[in-house]
Image 1 (cartoon, helix red, strand yellow):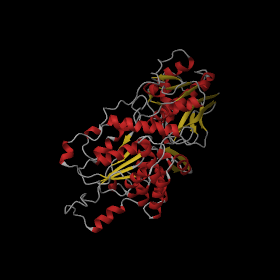
Image 2 (cartoon, rainbow, N blue to C red):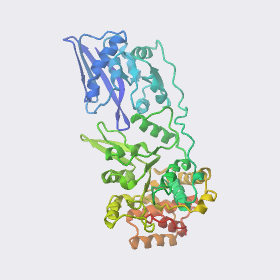
Image 3 (cartoon, one colour):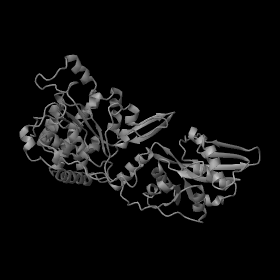
Image 4 (cartoon, rainbow, N blue to C red):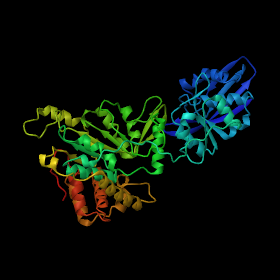
Length: 507
Protein backbone atom coordinates (compact mmCIF):
# COMPACT_ATOMS: atom_id res chain seq x y z
CA UNK A 1 0.00 0.00 0.00
CA UNK A 2 1.16 3.55 -0.71
CA UNK A 3 1.02 6.41 1.79
CA UNK A 4 2.15 10.03 1.48
CA UNK A 5 2.78 12.88 3.94
CA UNK A 6 4.29 16.35 3.52
CA UNK A 7 7.39 17.69 5.25
CA UNK A 8 10.00 20.33 4.40
CA UNK A 9 13.72 20.58 3.71
CA UNK A 10 15.71 23.71 4.60
CA UNK A 11 17.45 25.01 1.48
CA UNK A 12 19.73 27.74 2.78
CA UNK A 13 17.18 29.60 4.90
CA UNK A 14 14.18 28.84 2.66
CA UNK A 15 11.73 25.92 3.08
CA UNK A 16 11.29 23.48 0.21
CA UNK A 17 8.32 21.11 0.28
CA UNK A 18 9.20 17.41 0.36
CA UNK A 19 6.68 14.61 -0.17
CA UNK A 20 7.53 11.49 1.86
CA UNK A 21 6.12 8.52 -0.05
CA UNK A 22 6.16 5.05 1.51
CA UNK A 23 5.32 1.87 -0.37
CA UNK A 24 4.98 -1.49 1.45
CA UNK A 25 4.94 -4.70 -0.57
CA UNK A 26 5.36 -8.41 -0.04
CA UNK A 27 8.89 -9.71 -0.13
CA UNK A 28 11.95 -10.18 2.02
CA UNK A 29 11.97 -7.68 4.93
CA UNK A 30 13.90 -4.57 3.86
CA UNK A 31 13.76 -0.86 4.60
CA UNK A 32 15.19 1.52 2.00
CA UNK A 33 15.18 5.33 1.91
CA UNK A 34 15.84 7.00 -1.42
CA UNK A 35 15.72 10.63 -2.57
CA UNK A 36 19.22 12.15 -2.24
CA UNK A 37 19.40 12.15 1.54
CA UNK A 38 22.58 12.69 3.56
CA UNK A 39 23.99 10.36 6.22
CA UNK A 40 21.55 11.59 8.88
CA UNK A 41 18.61 10.80 6.57
CA UNK A 42 19.93 7.33 5.75
CA UNK A 43 20.53 6.58 9.43
CA UNK A 44 16.92 7.44 10.20
CA UNK A 45 15.94 3.86 9.27
CA UNK A 46 17.13 2.57 12.65
CA UNK A 47 15.60 5.48 14.58
CA UNK A 48 12.26 5.09 12.82
CA UNK A 49 12.18 1.31 13.35
CA UNK A 50 12.84 1.57 17.11
CA UNK A 51 10.53 4.56 17.55
CA UNK A 52 7.59 2.74 15.92
CA UNK A 53 8.08 -0.38 18.04
CA UNK A 54 8.65 1.50 21.31
CA UNK A 55 5.53 3.62 20.69
CA UNK A 56 3.35 0.51 20.70
CA UNK A 57 2.92 0.12 16.93
CA UNK A 58 3.90 -2.74 14.65
CA UNK A 59 6.83 -2.37 12.28
CA UNK A 60 5.91 -4.13 9.00
CA UNK A 61 8.09 -7.16 8.26
CA UNK A 62 7.84 -6.62 4.52
CA UNK A 63 9.64 -4.67 1.82
CA UNK A 64 9.45 -0.95 2.68
CA UNK A 65 10.57 1.77 0.28
CA UNK A 66 10.51 5.41 1.40
CA UNK A 67 11.03 8.08 -1.24
CA UNK A 68 11.76 11.74 -0.42
CA UNK A 69 10.54 13.67 -3.45
CA UNK A 70 11.71 15.62 -5.35
CA UNK A 71 14.77 13.43 -5.78
CA UNK A 72 16.80 16.32 -7.23
CA UNK A 73 16.71 18.26 -3.94
CA UNK A 74 19.34 17.35 -1.37
CA UNK A 75 17.93 16.50 2.05
CA UNK A 76 20.00 16.99 5.17
CA UNK A 77 19.41 16.47 8.87
CA UNK A 78 17.15 14.30 11.01
CA UNK A 79 14.00 16.41 10.63
CA UNK A 80 12.46 13.87 8.22
CA UNK A 81 12.22 11.09 10.84
CA UNK A 82 8.69 11.83 12.02
CA UNK A 83 7.30 12.15 8.49
CA UNK A 84 8.83 8.81 7.43
CA UNK A 85 7.40 7.09 10.51
CA UNK A 86 3.93 8.56 9.96
CA UNK A 87 3.95 7.51 6.30
CA UNK A 88 4.93 3.95 7.30
CA UNK A 89 2.04 3.83 9.76
CA UNK A 90 -0.28 5.06 7.04
CA UNK A 91 0.96 2.55 4.46
CA UNK A 92 0.63 -0.31 7.00
CA UNK A 93 -2.97 0.77 7.79
CA UNK A 94 -2.22 1.51 11.45
CA UNK A 95 -3.24 5.08 10.64
CA UNK A 96 -5.83 6.23 8.07
CA UNK A 97 -3.66 7.15 5.10
CA UNK A 98 -6.13 9.77 3.84
CA UNK A 99 -5.85 11.65 7.16
CA UNK A 100 -2.23 12.52 6.33
CA UNK A 101 -3.24 14.61 3.31
CA UNK A 102 -3.98 17.71 5.39
CA UNK A 103 -0.98 17.72 7.71
CA UNK A 104 2.76 18.37 7.51
CA UNK A 105 5.14 16.67 9.96
CA UNK A 106 8.63 17.74 11.04
CA UNK A 107 10.94 16.51 13.76
CA UNK A 108 13.62 14.04 14.81
CA UNK A 109 12.67 10.77 16.51
CA UNK A 110 14.46 9.23 19.44
CA UNK A 111 14.64 5.46 19.85
CA UNK A 112 11.90 5.67 22.48
CA UNK A 113 9.53 7.36 20.03
CA UNK A 114 9.67 10.88 21.46
CA UNK A 115 9.97 13.84 19.10
CA UNK A 116 13.18 15.80 19.47
CA UNK A 117 14.02 19.36 18.62
CA UNK A 118 15.10 20.06 15.02
CA UNK A 119 16.37 23.46 13.81
CA UNK A 120 14.43 25.40 11.21
CA UNK A 121 10.88 24.91 12.51
CA UNK A 122 9.89 28.51 11.77
CA UNK A 123 10.97 28.13 8.14
CA UNK A 124 9.00 24.87 7.98
CA UNK A 125 5.92 26.62 9.39
CA UNK A 126 6.20 29.36 6.76
CA UNK A 127 6.51 26.72 4.05
CA UNK A 128 3.48 24.89 5.40
CA UNK A 129 1.38 28.03 5.20
CA UNK A 130 2.58 28.78 1.66
CA UNK A 131 1.69 25.21 0.64
CA UNK A 132 -1.80 25.77 2.09
CA UNK A 133 -1.51 22.80 4.41
CA UNK A 134 -3.77 23.59 7.37
CA UNK A 135 -1.94 21.74 10.18
CA UNK A 136 1.69 21.24 11.21
CA UNK A 137 2.92 18.66 13.72
CA UNK A 138 6.21 19.54 15.45
CA UNK A 139 8.02 18.71 18.71
CA UNK A 140 6.29 20.32 21.68
CA UNK A 141 9.28 22.51 22.55
CA UNK A 142 9.11 24.01 19.05
CA UNK A 143 5.35 24.62 18.96
CA UNK A 144 5.76 28.19 20.19
CA UNK A 145 8.20 28.91 17.37
CA UNK A 146 5.89 27.47 14.71
CA UNK A 147 3.01 29.42 16.25
CA UNK A 148 4.67 32.67 15.20
CA UNK A 149 3.23 32.04 11.72
CA UNK A 150 -0.37 33.25 11.50
CA UNK A 151 -3.09 31.23 9.80
CA UNK A 152 -1.63 27.83 10.70
CA UNK A 153 -2.85 25.22 13.20
CA UNK A 154 0.16 23.90 15.11
CA UNK A 155 0.18 20.67 17.11
CA UNK A 156 3.11 20.36 19.49
CA UNK A 157 3.54 16.70 20.47
CA UNK A 158 5.80 14.77 22.83
CA UNK A 159 6.16 11.68 20.69
CA UNK A 160 4.96 9.49 17.85
CA UNK A 161 1.88 8.27 19.71
CA UNK A 162 0.69 11.85 20.29
CA UNK A 163 1.40 12.68 16.65
CA UNK A 164 -0.91 9.86 15.55
CA UNK A 165 -3.58 11.10 17.95
CA UNK A 166 -3.22 14.63 16.53
CA UNK A 167 -3.76 13.31 12.99
CA UNK A 168 -6.76 11.15 13.83
CA UNK A 169 -8.32 13.82 16.06
CA UNK A 170 -8.47 11.53 19.08
CA UNK A 171 -6.50 13.95 21.21
CA UNK A 172 -5.14 17.32 20.15
CA UNK A 173 -2.32 18.89 22.21
CA UNK A 174 -2.82 22.33 23.71
CA UNK A 175 -2.28 25.12 21.17
CA UNK A 176 1.01 27.04 21.32
CA UNK A 177 1.23 30.63 22.55
CA UNK A 178 0.05 33.29 20.14
CA UNK A 179 2.33 34.84 17.54
CA UNK A 180 2.36 38.07 19.52
CA UNK A 181 4.43 36.55 22.30
CA UNK A 182 7.52 38.72 22.75
CA UNK A 183 10.83 37.10 22.01
CA UNK A 184 14.35 38.02 23.01
CA UNK A 185 13.98 40.32 25.95
CA UNK A 186 17.50 41.71 25.95
CA UNK A 187 18.97 43.37 29.01
CA UNK A 188 18.82 47.13 29.19
CA UNK A 189 20.76 48.55 26.25
CA UNK A 190 23.98 50.44 26.83
CA UNK A 191 23.39 54.19 26.68
CA UNK A 192 25.21 56.94 24.83
CA UNK A 193 24.96 58.98 28.01
CA UNK A 194 27.92 56.92 29.27
CA UNK A 195 30.14 58.47 26.57
CA UNK A 196 32.18 61.57 27.28
CA UNK A 197 33.59 63.65 24.46
CA UNK A 198 33.73 61.98 21.01
CA UNK A 199 31.43 64.52 19.41
CA UNK A 200 32.30 63.53 15.83
CA UNK A 201 32.12 59.73 16.41
CA UNK A 202 28.73 60.20 18.10
CA UNK A 203 27.51 62.18 15.10
CA UNK A 204 28.81 59.43 12.79
CA UNK A 205 26.95 56.80 14.85
CA UNK A 206 23.69 58.69 14.40
CA UNK A 207 24.26 59.12 10.65
CA UNK A 208 25.08 55.41 10.31
CA UNK A 209 21.97 54.40 12.27
CA UNK A 210 19.70 56.79 10.37
CA UNK A 211 20.75 55.61 6.91
CA UNK A 212 22.04 52.09 7.56
CA UNK A 213 25.58 53.08 6.53
CA UNK A 214 28.81 51.18 7.17
CA UNK A 215 31.22 52.73 9.67
CA UNK A 216 34.92 52.32 10.45
CA UNK A 217 36.44 53.83 13.59
CA UNK A 218 40.21 54.13 13.86
CA UNK A 219 42.21 55.22 16.85
CA UNK A 220 44.71 54.23 19.55
CA UNK A 221 43.87 51.50 22.08
CA UNK A 222 41.54 52.44 24.92
CA UNK A 223 39.95 55.50 23.31
CA UNK A 224 36.41 54.05 23.25
CA UNK A 225 35.93 52.51 19.79
CA UNK A 226 34.38 49.29 21.10
CA UNK A 227 32.36 51.19 23.71
CA UNK A 228 30.83 53.36 20.99
CA UNK A 229 30.05 50.43 18.69
CA UNK A 230 28.30 48.44 21.41
CA UNK A 231 25.97 51.37 22.07
CA UNK A 232 24.84 51.58 18.45
CA UNK A 233 21.89 49.14 18.95
CA UNK A 234 20.44 51.50 21.56
CA UNK A 235 19.66 54.11 18.87
CA UNK A 236 18.51 51.83 16.04
CA UNK A 237 14.79 51.73 15.20
CA UNK A 238 12.91 48.53 16.12
CA UNK A 239 12.40 45.76 13.60
CA UNK A 240 9.21 45.76 11.57
CA UNK A 241 6.99 42.67 11.83
CA UNK A 242 8.23 41.28 8.51
CA UNK A 243 11.87 41.92 9.43
CA UNK A 244 11.43 40.30 12.85
CA UNK A 245 10.01 37.14 11.28
CA UNK A 246 12.88 37.00 8.76
CA UNK A 247 15.52 37.44 11.47
CA UNK A 248 13.87 34.82 13.67
CA UNK A 249 13.79 32.36 10.77
CA UNK A 250 17.52 32.77 10.11
CA UNK A 251 18.35 32.19 13.78
CA UNK A 252 16.02 29.20 13.83
CA UNK A 253 17.79 27.60 10.85
CA UNK A 254 21.14 28.23 12.55
CA UNK A 255 19.89 26.53 15.74
CA UNK A 256 20.06 29.76 17.77
CA UNK A 257 16.33 30.23 18.41
CA UNK A 258 15.77 31.34 22.03
CA UNK A 259 11.96 31.48 22.14
CA UNK A 260 9.43 33.97 20.82
CA UNK A 261 9.78 36.48 18.04
CA UNK A 262 13.14 38.28 17.89
CA UNK A 263 12.16 41.91 18.32
CA UNK A 264 15.55 43.64 18.70
CA UNK A 265 18.05 44.13 15.91
CA UNK A 266 20.87 41.56 15.96
CA UNK A 267 24.33 42.62 17.07
CA UNK A 268 26.99 40.10 16.10
CA UNK A 269 30.62 40.52 17.14
CA UNK A 270 32.69 37.52 15.93
CA UNK A 271 36.27 36.99 17.05
CA UNK A 272 38.99 37.94 14.60
CA UNK A 273 40.04 34.28 14.19
CA UNK A 274 36.78 33.45 12.38
CA UNK A 275 37.07 31.76 8.99
CA UNK A 276 35.56 33.04 5.74
CA UNK A 277 32.87 30.33 5.90
CA UNK A 278 32.01 31.29 9.47
CA UNK A 279 31.74 34.95 8.47
CA UNK A 280 29.66 34.75 5.28
CA UNK A 281 28.24 31.21 5.52
CA UNK A 282 29.16 27.78 4.24
CA UNK A 283 30.03 24.37 5.59
CA UNK A 284 28.49 21.02 4.72
CA UNK A 285 25.57 21.32 4.73
CA UNK A 286 25.78 25.11 4.24
CA UNK A 287 24.67 27.16 7.23
CA UNK A 288 24.21 30.92 7.73
CA UNK A 289 27.34 32.80 8.72
CA UNK A 290 27.72 35.81 11.00
CA UNK A 291 26.83 38.12 8.10
CA UNK A 292 23.42 36.46 7.79
CA UNK A 293 22.90 36.26 11.55
CA UNK A 294 23.41 40.07 11.54
CA UNK A 295 20.72 40.53 8.86
CA UNK A 296 18.74 43.74 9.56
CA UNK A 297 21.19 44.43 12.39
CA UNK A 298 24.86 45.17 13.05
CA UNK A 299 27.98 43.13 12.28
CA UNK A 300 30.75 44.49 14.49
CA UNK A 301 34.33 43.57 13.59
CA UNK A 302 36.62 44.64 16.42
CA UNK A 303 40.34 44.75 15.67
CA UNK A 304 39.56 44.75 11.95
CA UNK A 305 43.20 44.55 10.88
CA UNK A 306 43.60 41.26 12.78
CA UNK A 307 41.00 39.43 10.66
CA UNK A 308 42.28 37.18 7.89
CA UNK A 309 42.48 39.00 4.56
CA UNK A 310 40.48 36.24 2.84
CA UNK A 311 37.69 36.55 5.41
CA UNK A 312 37.41 40.31 4.99
CA UNK A 313 37.47 40.08 1.20
CA UNK A 314 34.63 37.55 1.39
CA UNK A 315 32.47 40.36 2.79
CA UNK A 316 32.78 42.52 -0.31
CA UNK A 317 29.97 40.92 -2.31
CA UNK A 318 27.53 40.60 0.64
CA UNK A 319 28.07 44.28 1.46
CA UNK A 320 27.28 45.31 -2.10
CA UNK A 321 24.41 42.94 -2.92
CA UNK A 322 22.70 42.36 0.44
CA UNK A 323 23.00 38.58 0.03
CA UNK A 324 25.64 35.91 -0.42
CA UNK A 325 25.52 32.97 -2.82
CA UNK A 326 27.04 29.70 -1.61
CA UNK A 327 27.71 27.18 -4.40
CA UNK A 328 27.80 23.53 -3.35
CA UNK A 329 27.59 20.66 -5.82
CA UNK A 330 26.20 22.74 -8.69
CA UNK A 331 23.55 24.12 -6.34
CA UNK A 332 23.35 27.78 -5.31
CA UNK A 333 22.07 28.71 -1.85
CA UNK A 334 21.16 32.33 -1.09
CA UNK A 335 21.65 33.75 2.40
CA UNK A 336 20.43 37.32 3.13
CA UNK A 337 23.08 39.73 4.42
CA UNK A 338 21.50 43.18 4.67
CA UNK A 339 23.50 44.36 7.69
CA UNK A 340 25.37 47.43 8.90
CA UNK A 341 29.11 46.85 9.06
CA UNK A 342 30.72 48.61 12.01
CA UNK A 343 34.44 48.06 12.46
CA UNK A 344 37.20 49.29 14.76
CA UNK A 345 40.92 49.21 14.16
CA UNK A 346 44.17 50.62 15.44
CA UNK A 347 46.24 52.86 13.14
CA UNK A 348 49.27 50.55 13.33
CA UNK A 349 50.34 47.26 14.96
CA UNK A 350 51.35 48.92 18.23
CA UNK A 351 48.31 51.22 18.05
CA UNK A 352 50.02 54.55 18.66
CA UNK A 353 50.84 55.86 15.17
CA UNK A 354 50.71 59.66 15.03
CA UNK A 355 51.02 60.10 18.82
CA UNK A 356 54.44 61.65 19.26
CA UNK A 357 57.23 59.17 19.96
CA UNK A 358 54.93 56.49 21.37
CA UNK A 359 54.75 54.50 18.11
CA UNK A 360 57.37 51.75 17.90
CA UNK A 361 56.42 50.47 14.43
CA UNK A 362 58.79 50.61 11.50
CA UNK A 363 57.84 51.54 7.97
CA UNK A 364 57.56 47.90 6.95
CA UNK A 365 55.20 47.26 9.90
CA UNK A 366 52.98 50.11 8.80
CA UNK A 367 52.87 48.89 5.20
CA UNK A 368 52.05 45.36 6.32
CA UNK A 369 49.28 46.70 8.56
CA UNK A 370 47.77 48.75 5.74
CA UNK A 371 47.85 45.81 3.32
CA UNK A 372 45.57 43.81 5.65
CA UNK A 373 42.70 46.18 4.78
CA UNK A 374 42.07 46.01 1.07
CA UNK A 375 41.09 49.10 -0.89
CA UNK A 376 37.90 47.52 -2.31
CA UNK A 377 36.68 46.76 1.23
CA UNK A 378 37.44 50.26 2.52
CA UNK A 379 35.70 51.73 -0.54
CA UNK A 380 32.49 50.01 0.60
CA UNK A 381 32.59 51.76 3.99
CA UNK A 382 30.65 55.02 4.04
CA UNK A 383 32.01 56.67 7.18
CA UNK A 384 35.69 56.65 8.25
CA UNK A 385 36.06 58.32 11.64
CA UNK A 386 39.02 58.90 13.91
CA UNK A 387 38.47 58.24 17.62
CA UNK A 388 40.97 60.12 19.75
CA UNK A 389 41.66 60.30 23.45
CA UNK A 390 39.09 62.43 25.32
CA UNK A 391 40.44 65.36 27.29
CA UNK A 392 40.14 65.61 31.05
CA UNK A 393 37.69 68.49 30.61
CA UNK A 394 35.44 66.30 28.45
CA UNK A 395 35.42 63.61 31.14
CA UNK A 396 33.98 66.07 33.65
CA UNK A 397 31.54 67.66 31.16
CA UNK A 398 27.94 66.49 30.59
CA UNK A 399 27.39 63.89 27.85
CA UNK A 400 27.00 65.12 24.28
CA UNK A 401 23.73 63.19 23.90
CA UNK A 402 21.93 60.13 25.22
CA UNK A 403 20.36 57.14 23.50
CA UNK A 404 16.78 58.32 24.00
CA UNK A 405 17.33 61.60 22.17
CA UNK A 406 19.52 60.03 19.50
CA UNK A 407 17.01 57.23 18.86
CA UNK A 408 14.18 59.74 18.46
CA UNK A 409 16.23 61.70 15.94
CA UNK A 410 17.18 58.53 14.05
CA UNK A 411 13.59 57.30 14.10
CA UNK A 412 12.31 60.52 12.55
CA UNK A 413 14.92 60.29 9.79
CA UNK A 414 13.97 56.66 9.08
CA UNK A 415 10.29 57.58 8.91
CA UNK A 416 11.07 60.22 6.28
CA UNK A 417 12.93 57.63 4.23
CA UNK A 418 10.12 55.08 4.50
CA UNK A 419 7.58 57.63 3.30
CA UNK A 420 9.86 58.70 0.46
CA UNK A 421 10.62 55.18 -0.75
CA UNK A 422 7.17 53.68 -0.26
CA UNK A 423 6.44 51.36 -3.17
CA UNK A 424 10.13 50.72 -3.96
CA UNK A 425 12.50 47.96 -2.86
CA UNK A 426 14.51 50.40 -0.70
CA UNK A 427 13.75 50.98 2.97
CA UNK A 428 16.59 53.36 3.86
CA UNK A 429 19.23 55.46 2.11
CA UNK A 430 21.97 52.83 2.10
CA UNK A 431 19.83 50.60 -0.15
CA UNK A 432 19.31 53.18 -2.91
CA UNK A 433 20.34 52.17 -6.41
CA UNK A 434 22.02 54.67 -8.72
CA UNK A 435 18.72 55.37 -10.49
CA UNK A 436 16.85 55.82 -7.21
CA UNK A 437 19.59 58.10 -5.91
CA UNK A 438 19.23 60.37 -8.94
CA UNK A 439 15.48 60.46 -8.43
CA UNK A 440 15.26 60.95 -4.66
CA UNK A 441 18.48 62.66 -3.55
CA UNK A 442 17.43 66.18 -4.66
CA UNK A 443 20.96 67.60 -4.47
CA UNK A 444 21.28 71.36 -4.99
CA UNK A 445 23.56 72.57 -7.78
CA UNK A 446 26.41 73.81 -5.58
CA UNK A 447 26.44 70.53 -3.68
CA UNK A 448 26.60 68.61 -6.95
CA UNK A 449 29.64 70.65 -7.98
CA UNK A 450 31.39 69.74 -4.69
CA UNK A 451 30.87 66.05 -5.37
CA UNK A 452 32.03 66.46 -8.98
CA UNK A 453 35.19 68.30 -7.87
CA UNK A 454 36.01 65.56 -5.35
CA UNK A 455 35.48 62.89 -7.99
CA UNK A 456 37.54 64.70 -10.65
CA UNK A 457 40.30 65.28 -8.11
CA UNK A 458 40.66 61.55 -7.49
CA UNK A 459 39.36 61.67 -3.93
CA UNK A 460 36.39 59.46 -4.76
CA UNK A 461 35.84 56.35 -6.82
CA UNK A 462 32.61 55.91 -8.78
CA UNK A 463 31.29 53.77 -5.92
CA UNK A 464 32.50 56.31 -3.36
CA UNK A 465 30.69 59.09 -5.22
CA UNK A 466 27.39 57.24 -4.83
CA UNK A 467 28.06 56.53 -1.17
CA UNK A 468 28.85 60.17 -0.40
CA UNK A 469 25.51 61.20 -1.92
CA UNK A 470 23.68 58.57 0.14
CA UNK A 471 25.33 59.80 3.33
CA UNK A 472 24.55 63.42 2.42
CA UNK A 473 20.90 62.40 1.87
CA UNK A 474 20.90 60.89 5.37
CA UNK A 475 22.41 64.03 6.91
CA UNK A 476 19.65 66.09 5.31
CA UNK A 477 17.05 63.66 6.67
CA UNK A 478 18.47 64.04 10.18
CA UNK A 479 18.10 67.80 9.79
CA UNK A 480 14.55 67.44 8.45
CA UNK A 481 15.31 68.83 4.98
CA UNK A 482 13.99 67.61 1.64
CA UNK A 483 16.93 69.00 -0.35
CA UNK A 484 20.59 68.05 0.07
CA UNK A 485 22.66 71.19 0.62
CA UNK A 486 26.35 71.84 0.14
CA UNK A 487 26.89 71.66 3.92
CA UNK A 488 25.52 68.09 3.90
CA UNK A 489 27.91 67.09 1.12
CA UNK A 490 30.89 68.76 2.83
CA UNK A 491 30.15 66.86 6.04
CA UNK A 492 29.72 63.59 4.13
CA UNK A 493 33.05 64.16 2.36
CA UNK A 494 34.85 64.99 5.60
CA UNK A 495 33.50 61.81 7.23
CA UNK A 496 34.78 59.72 4.32
CA UNK A 497 38.41 60.77 4.70
CA UNK A 498 40.64 58.05 6.11
CA UNK A 499 40.44 57.86 9.88
CA UNK A 500 43.20 58.88 12.22
CA UNK A 501 42.13 62.32 13.34
CA UNK A 502 39.09 63.51 15.23
CA UNK A 503 39.54 67.21 14.70
CA UNK A 504 37.32 67.18 11.60
CA UNK A 505 34.39 69.47 12.19
CA UNK A 506 31.14 69.90 10.33
CA UNK A 507 31.14 72.61 7.69
